[in-house]
Image (cartoon, rainbow, N blue to C red; front, side, top):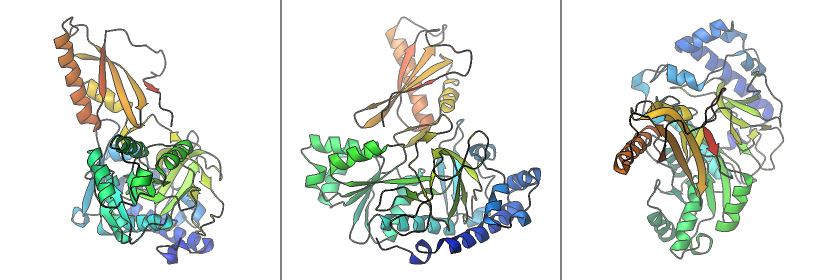
Length: 433
């Protein structure tokens, strides 16, 4: 596929090395000057921006963590004045506090540029109708895909999530050629379409899926492609990086990460030591040009490996394997990040239930479902079904508001859930990806 931006996508590796080094050194100076947290962390590590004399020296810089955004909530990591911000996005946090991400005009431009390159690399462009079925609003997925699609000259159909029958009708009536959504939701759309007597592969113009926001396997890719008659491409990003930013190219051999925008490492999650190409570990990303919320050596927690081989597409940018899991215990339910600690945090605010709970995640058809089993406190336990149903509804409502995803709730008797002497095993994940 012809590149969207030949200057950077076709830049030789040696020139990309030099560019990355200049950008990384500039970033180190910016953080040292404008980020109190990172300035202190650099002093603790006895490192100064002057010590970055080569690209490899980036490893001298200290890590950043998800908890840094929580500890400095809401905007303590921002390095520009509020007057320069053009947008906020907000995503789930680990203890009830959300993650707030800010953007300058340049940040939005680079985010859009990244996705324009990505979408072009999988063959999309002017003449395509791209249905965006990620959530819009505080979630970054919908608007990110929307901006990238418009930039390449495609027509955008901003359906967001839900109202699936209407989505199928619009896909058919308006000739959608591509869809951006979670893989599980695309399978659900396919099932709904079948019930409506519509075969997506035969009765629509759909030929491309841009799928992400939850783990999915190569087996699921094959299932989607065979069942729906489309090409399914992996997309990757997190709100802290800007949002969805990087995709596979048409070769479907790993996710390209643009070296003028990001510097990637894979480390041993226990020791923090770097791992070589092909070795699976924790992904670390340095965003080289972000203004509002610079992220330097950010430990995302996703498990992957770096592919250090030339891609047949000709782009001299590294690729990462699809994400296979998380270092921490985060769950992704229908594209929403859910932490057991969030559930615990919410339950502890409900006086009728105890601190013992269990999470069961399953896949019913194409969609993820989560069941939370929680013990009722002895003083609140009742043999009246109406009383228990009222508590159950209250717990479900509280969790829905805290997690931004619907949860089934099962109340159980006090003392009936397993106890553990060591770390509690609260999650039973029955999904087969």
